[in-house]
Image (cartoon, rainbow, N blue to C red; front, side, top):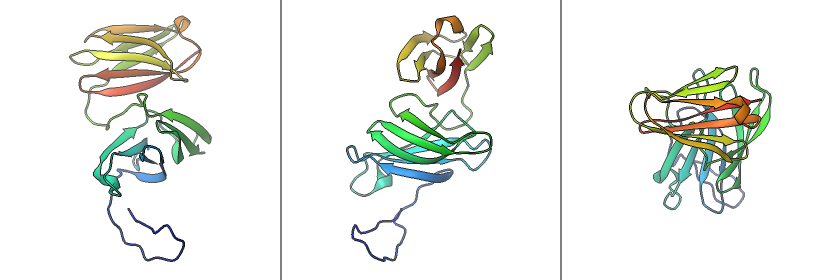
Length: 197
């Protein structure tokens, strides 16, 4: 972290602080209403998972002294390059052409689940695709809140599942397009993208 005076000129810079970003930082923005700062980037090891750092509630100019959160996105194979606030809770994200993924502009609500959390040894729900739709099976013990959300952020379905439950999502009962299946358990939080046709 470097600080610059607001007046134009030539200055010698010294680092004021550092953040272990756990990857490469490719974009940054600050919301002038809330003061929230976001950093975008991607991990430098396969599968190059894109991430967002949010820096919140920091005292004065101590950007890393507040509540900092690293959000892993559930999409892989993209290289996030730019970020801009649309509203205090909504971001525009851009990615460049990368391997087999074309350049795109994305909109992301920070109020929606994004497949959050570090990639660690947490249990993972099993979402299996079938010709007629999908089945979701929970791991381990406990219950989980399952939500299906459309691209506009509208909640289509919400269920609380118990361990060993299986939830069937019928294609015929879902609107067409990209949908987000959010699963929040007692020791994990994840999301999966499905496309209903």
